[in-house]
Length: 166
Image (cartoon, rainbow, N blue to C red):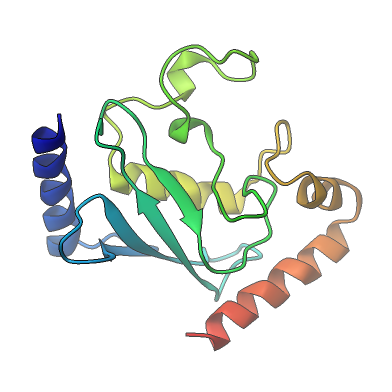
């Protein structure tokens, strides 16, 4: 599987280099490791994250594309679907199959048809509309629901700081 994974990731990287997608950039963290990518997500327009620049690391398992990668922000980010350690929690990054807790349908979870591009488009969408049904960051979800003005202020401050650190 590793050889297949390597070829597929090289192909996806080449495609993203030839045809960049608005909203993010992607490249290898180190030239000799196709399984770790450095990602830069630009805060989407008309969201609290607008103007921000959020770095992340995408780590692919050797079983890719049968199993999903992990995505972890290395820039501070405050969001209901991002664990305090920066790890992104969205359905398409969960292993394929049935959810043992019953929150997600199998069709919402990882499928080998996903690419780096579809993952990052989903993350950008997540920034626009958090899912507070099963949050990764309970504090952020609670604040988003119960004290939106405070949540908004905190997120906009983090977005500004991320732009200043560029």
